[in-house]
Amino acid sequence: MSIVDNKKAFFDYFIEDRYEAGLVLEGWEVKAIREGRVQIKEAYVVVRNGELFLFGAHVSALTTTSSFSHPEALRTRKLLLHKAEIDKLVGKVERSGYTLVPLNLHFKAGRVKCEVGLAKGKKQHDKRDTEKDRDAKREVEKAMKQHRR
Image (cartoon, rainbow, N blue to C red):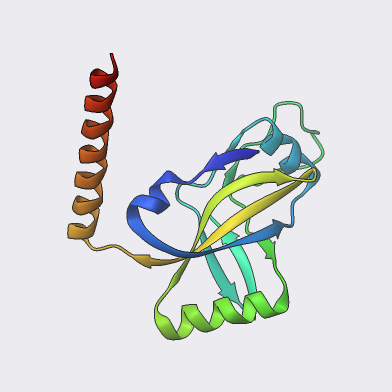
């Protein structure tokens, strides 16, 4: 069950490969994510000391959170992957010019998971081509719908 999708990632990047990573979260963050108070549109993944971290994911605190805790909406969150997967991703990012982009947040067996995409950036003309293809597909579907009536 998807919580939030990063539609901008598919517009800005060619997604080559996908990985499912766990997230290190605090209790209030899980509750806020369950309520859908999360946004990953401008989030990105960074490699530091052989570990992956999610930057820029905005989790808004609930109004019912404790007055003793001081929640940070833009906190850096650690991503959990197997060591072999991390090594493979680090190699691609450092040598081949790939980027790691969060694609979506979803639940799996009651836990919040982040789908990370290994991506290559699109040029402006590639974005225009994507938009043109999407518009053409929409027109074909519209014509097919009209034809069925």
